[in-house]
Structure formats: structure tokens, C-alpha cells
Length: 552
Image 1 (cartoon, rainbow, N blue to C red):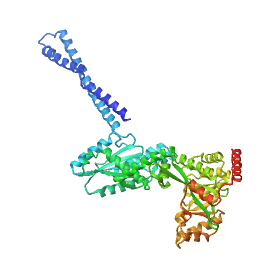
Image 2: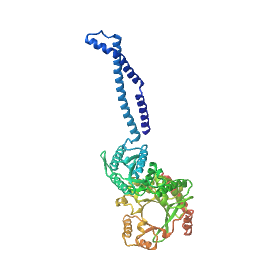
Image 3: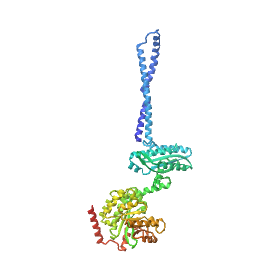
Image 4: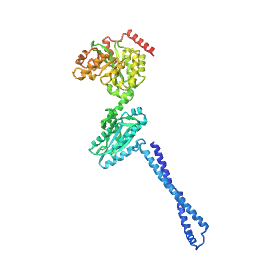
């Protein structure tokens, strides 16, 4: 759009230059004036004497020359007027072309082309007045969802209204720039040591944007995340603090605000840039690690609390990075979800875990925790079934763990996936129960086989506070719904004894040891004589494989 406007502006300037230098019109005007001075001076006295009745009629040739001269004057005057009107119109076109090149056509604010230049001018002006300049980068939260649910027409209306709200609350010298999409940048000047004024302005903008919007018979509510940066007076790099640099820093701070929960603001700090750089390095390393087969499954024991015997293992992801060493899933799983490689990573680990678990005794189950992102894949159940067919692992020994938060995203899709898995004999466990506020109706309507109590509650059962009572209530709820319970996070004998008194419970935690890789897990089971029977279990696996193949 800006390129087209620039071409229109160049065309208008060329035509305007042509209009201002029309030599034909200028020549006609000069010739008409000279001719009138030459012929009019001789003709007018004769006409006057003829009118007084004391002279002869003027010469016909001279009269025709004067008439022609008058016609030329009229033509030149009209040409002048036409050119003058054309110049005015073309200047209007030039102004319009400049506006199209410098203004966002939707919101009317400065665009990405003109915004940085305007901010640089504000910085120079503020420096001359011993002031600082703050840049706010604003990004609307969940704007894609607004577009998807209501259409782009409503989305454009929301952007227009929000831009108006922001402009109304900016100081007179403040600037608003639409960087692109739903991202804006504001620039304001303020006196040194009065940064609190910018804080107050930012809080006002957040409050204004969060007010409901009524548009096209639709009520839309939105919030925004804001990152701020400012010039640094007295520093060696002050002269290098350009608009682009300030916007870049504010953008990093805005990203930080989104990571901290959205609908808030943060000022840029140097460590944020270091964190972002490290995160980018991690993203690259994760992709490279997938290709290099650096992600491996670890296994945490699941114990029958009454007998103390191993009854299963939960698979946990670990990253044996050549660069960073053994990396916790708390670090790489959220990044893998955001860069959309969690599906590939999880499927790779599940396939390896199924092959590892084939060597365990047939009584030992394998639990696999599924990312909420994977449940958005309509083919997820088919992928799991395909891996069972491929490896020959019995479906009855596999337990899929779904976190409680998944029930609030797309219950219809979750229900369909659970039904597909259950039809093949796979058990479904509701993980982190107690943290996601699922309803009793959901527990009754979805065919879960087990509840897993979140470790944050289990660790408090030894005390007499509300957390301990909550664990007892969940166990009672499980009994009422005929759902067995697994307690994770058992880390000491006191917690173990409290849980044993609640009934038939399966537990896991560091009291029984740290998660181990496949080799250490196999060695542990070998000592307990819990490895697969080479005849019975392999035959069982083949039967399961054939059964799944017949099922399609």
C-alpha cells in the first residue's frame, strides 16, 4: 500500500511540475499582451474619434488584429484559470498520496514506514528540552481468537476503536504507530526522574482497552500486554538510541509480559534480552536435538501402596543435550509446545517407551502424559493405535494421562479422542486432578479409568490443613465414582502412612527413587524378576498386535 502511494505521489509531482512550467500558456499570454499594446494603442484613438463623429473608420485589418488579440487574452486567461485549478487539485492529490504513504488506512495512525522517523524526531526534540522518550509496544491478547470467532470485519472494528481509545489518552505530543496486525507502538516524552507518569499512562491505557466493545451486535472483550523502553540520558549510547532500538527493546519487554500472564506491562531490562537470546538458542537446539535423537524416555516407579510392589511406570521426557547436558522437561516442554514440535517429540518418546516396556513383565503398565497441544490433533488417537500395531505392545497395558486443564479447551474433541482410545482397550487417567476445576458432570460423562492427585496436594496430606482434607475428599470422590486413585509426589514416610490409611491407592514419588533411563529400569526389574517371560509375554504381544490389526 505504501509503495503504491509513493508511486502516486511521484506521478502527481511530475504532473505538477509540468503544470507550473507550461511554456505554451506563458508564450500565449506574453504574445497577447505585446500585441494588445501594439495594436490597441493605434486602434483605440480612432474608435474614439469615430464615436465623436470627427474621424474616419479604423482599418479593417487593424480591427481584426485587435479582435484576435482580445480572443488570445481570453484564451490565455481561461488557460491560466484551468492550470491554477489543476495545480490545486494536484496538490491535494500530492497531500493525499503522502497521507496514504505515512498513515495506516484502517486506524489512521502512523504506519511502520513513517512511525520510526516521527519517533526519531520526537527523541531529538525531547533531547533538546532535556527530556526522555518512552516507547510502549502494545499487543492485544488473543486477537486471533477474536478474528476467528467473529470474523475479520469485527476484528477491524475492534482495532479501530482501540486505536481511538489509545489516542484519546495520549498527551498532545504523543505518537501512535501501527506496527502491524494487532501490534501498536506509542511514544511519549517525559521529564527525567518522572517515569511514574509513564506508568500511570500505561495503566490507564490497559484499563481503557479492557473495557467491553459493542460492535456489529457483538460484545467483545480484550486485554493487552505492554512492553516499555526509554532513552537513557547521560549514557555513551544515548545518541545510538534510535526508534528502531527502542521498539525492539519494548517488544522484548512485551513478550516478557505475555509470558507472565498477559494483561500487564513490564519495563525493558537487559537480562530480558539475554533470556530471549538464550530461548532462541534453545529453540534451535531442540530442533537439532530431535534430528540427533537426543530426547530419551525416563521411567518413574508406580507402587501399590498396600503391597509395596511395582505395578507400573510413568514415562517422563528427558533431553540429553550435547550442549546443555541433561535438561529438565520443565524447560524444554513449554518451548517445544510453542514452536509446534511437541507432537513429533512425544510420538518419538512414546514409540521408544513402548519398545522398552515390551521387556517388562506383563503385569506392569506404562503411563504416558499427553500435552494439551496434542489433543488438538484430530488424528492423535489413530497415531497412538498405529504405534501399538507397529510395536506389538498390548493396549491393555497402556495408560494415557490427560491433564485436567484439557477439559476446558475443546471438550468435544477430547471426548472423541478418549472414546477412540478406550474402544481399543487403552486406559485413560485424569492427571493433576484438583488443579483444573473440572465438574462432577464431566467426570461422570467422560470414561476415565483413574484419577491422579496433583503432587502439590499430596505433599501436604501429613498436615491438618485444607490441603490434607482435599486429598481425602478426592479419594472419597474416586470411590464414589468407582475410579481408582494414583497419588504422585510421595517423598517421605509420613505422607506414605497417611495415604495407606485411605484405601487402595497407587503411588509414585522420590521416596521410591529418582526416575531412571531404560537401562537402569531394566536392571531394577531384572533384580526383582519382573522382566517379560520370553514365551508367554511375547505371545501376548503378538495376540495384541493381531487384535489391533483386525480392528483397523
